[in-house]
Length: 102
Image (cartoon, rainbow, N blue to C red; front, side):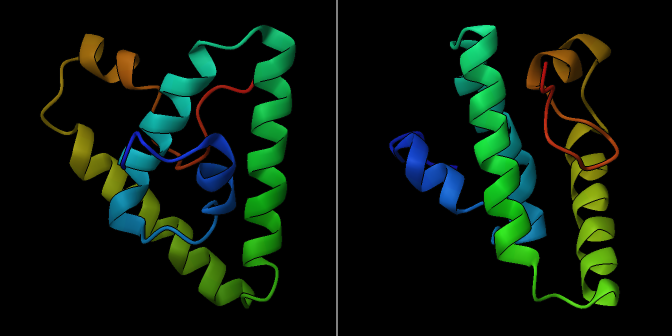
């Protein structure tokens, strides 16, 4: 995921990213969110979630479930050879959801 994207560009991509690119996308979100205060971090993730909801609103539930399964598979493949320490540093979640939101 290019680090040169603005926060707004990154947010607008939520829900549109191909599953195999989601691990990098989530790691970039995590990296940016770590630099924010707790209040700013919550607002940032709320904007990401709102964009993802908007961008996936017209998917059928079958499409959405398949997309989420593909995301989980991509994340598992990405972290399979990482140590626990490396995994913890990425902010990735094995359930495919966004990095921490608190």
